Length: 235
Image 1 (cartoon, rainbow, N blue to C red):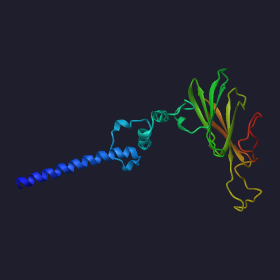
Image 2: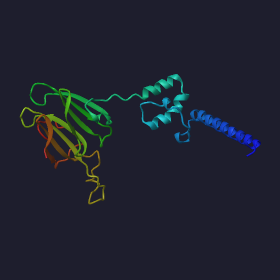
Image 3: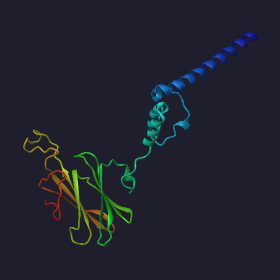
Image 4: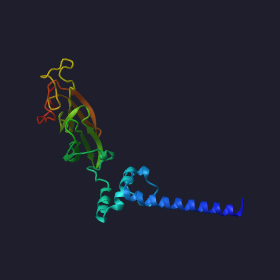
């Protein structure tokens, strides 16, 4: 290659490198200001996105944060803080909870009241029920309304042994529609109609609750009914 050719080659390479650097920086700035989707953006410093949220959320929110006012940035920072758990009894804290009731009940007749936390999830027919029992601050049992819908409960010594049983009943819903398998408008059972119920009794044995007895009622009860009388709902 001649001397002139080498000079031309150097100039071409230098121009191409300069164009590439300029183009990259131009896209870098515009990507932040335009709010383009992540897949269209160029690389950016990682120290700007080390926030304690899922990675996808971080990448979507960073452009908004750069263009926001200082107040908005503070609010965004507050939103990234983890929510305070409704109970501190283990890994179940991530469940969505709409209502919590905290009780003090002597479950074993030793004149010391244990903590019982009753949590209900969102929804109506599909509302979850969870009962956590703690002794000396340590969770010993978790009981759920897992056999049907629209669960309710009571805590009572039903066999007179000075230990409290936990009774949970859950509705057995018939999903068949009128005209299906002989179901009529009169016998159709909607979510808000009375249901048969599965009644589960949990008994305290060796410091923990165990499933002890289960039956299904023949009688139909209103959704989430209460049973204030002593003993179990009649079959």
